[in-house]
Length: 330
Ligand code: ZN
Image 1 (cartoon, protein in one colour):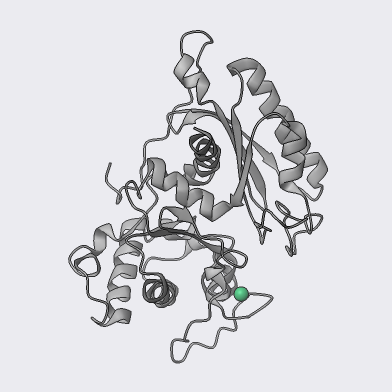
Image 2 (cartoon, rainbow, N blue to C red):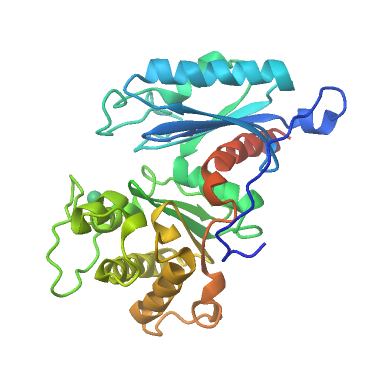
C-alpha cells in the first residue's frame, strides 16, 4: 500500500467464532487509545480483525474507564479470553515502573484527569493478564512498526498534529521514555520574520504546538484546518514551522523515517499530498544539504509519510503494546 494515499481502505471489523481460530484466540488482545476528548477501544488480533467502541473521556475518569473496562469484558465474553491489554494515553503520563504514580496522567489541564490513575483502573479490572502502558504517540509508533508505515524500522518518529502535537520516538526498536517521555510538540522553533502571532500554548506561547496545532490554526486564521483555502498564507507558514521542527528532530534523533499523522496533515482543502509535498520541500530547505542521506534527497517522499494505518494508528498501537507484552512473555 502506498504511503502517499490518504484514502486508506477502512478496515472491516470481523467476528471470529470460537473453536475455529485457536491461533487468533491465543493472540486476542485489547487496546485502549485514551484521548483528551474520546477513548477508542478495540479487541482483536490486528488491524484487519478488530471490534471497537468509542467513549467520551468527559471529566470523570472513574465513569469513563468503567465504560471502557465493562466493554472489554463484554467483548471478552463474546470473542474469547483476552491475553493482554495495551493502553496508549494522552499525557503527560508517568512511565516509570518504579514510581508510585506509574500509569497516571500527571499535569494535564483537562478537568478531572489530573493525577488520574489510568493503568491502575484497567489492571484492577483485569488482574489476571498483563496491561501495558505508554504514551498515545509511542503506542501509535509501535502500531506503525508492526503493521503500518514503519515496518522493519528500528529508528523512526511518529508525530501527530491535531488538537496538540505529540511525538513518539522508537530508538533501537524500543519506544524512547528517558527522563519522562519526549515532548517534541513543545520544542521552540525560530519565528518566520514578520510573523507576530503569539501562539496558543499555555506554557510557552509560540512553541511548535503553540504555532501549528489545530487550535493554533483556528486562532491564527479564524478557520479550522479543514476550511482554510488552499492558497492561504497559513498553509505556507504551517509547512515552514513544521519543517523547522522536523529539521530539529532529524538533527537530534537521526530517524530513518518520520510519520506525520493527526488531522492537520490531511491538509483540509489543500489535500494531504500537497501538504506533504510542501513540508518535504521545506525540510530540504531547512537542512540546506548539511545532513547527507539519499533519504533526505530523492528519497524524501518515502522519508516523511502519512501513517500506513491512517486514523487507526492510535488504537492499533495500543493493541500492539499488548501484543508486544505477549511477545516478551514468549
Ligand atoms: Zn508548549
